Image (cartoon, rainbow, N blue to C red; front, side):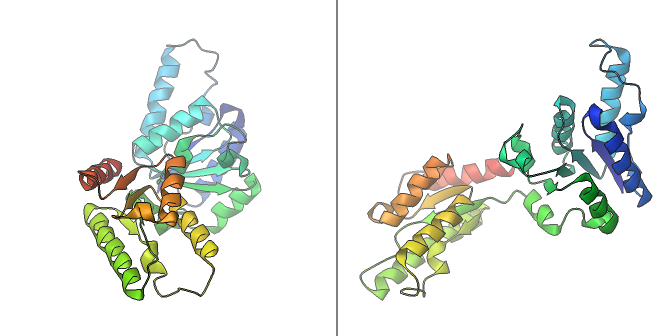
Length: 267
């Protein structure tokens, strides 16, 4: 396997340490920029800078995966962007979770499906590399995420006056969920998840739990009659607050719009 390692020029000693460790496991480094003279002082357009930039992109293209060490500056994030643009898996390391929370500079691409985030000291990273076979740097779940399957939450009334009314609400949601699946997204149907649990826990528990599931979804589609459900109305408002798309099945062309969105998100 071949790898490319990117980080700040100020951290070249750490970069060399990690690269040498990876090479000791039989991996091949595609391009080692740490062995080159510091070109930061060279003027823009300097031939040496141009050639290094070209070699770095070639190194990323030839790598099976890319290691990015945070913190990093403009160059580090350019390397991250190039890796993702070329479809490379990225092992993204930070010393602590502040990098993901936005306490310091944060980037939306940290959450790209091809990225596996790991956090801990450099000593922890060394131990992780020593103890983990390279083929396990990226668990299968990362490969599944790379397929870019979106999750769509199905919202609508659940409660009814009779068990029959509840069953009809569940079946209506399931039918819509199947349409979502056929369109290429994974439906999350809370109705079907708890259809036989009535009375086992409080309504507040179920409503809080479904809102938490909703927050982990990429979009929402509502069944006909969602407006008469206080729970569904709250879910729609939460999805709008999150800035994620909401499609109402009762509206003309709503499902066509949802299908077009799913196809767009797969690109």
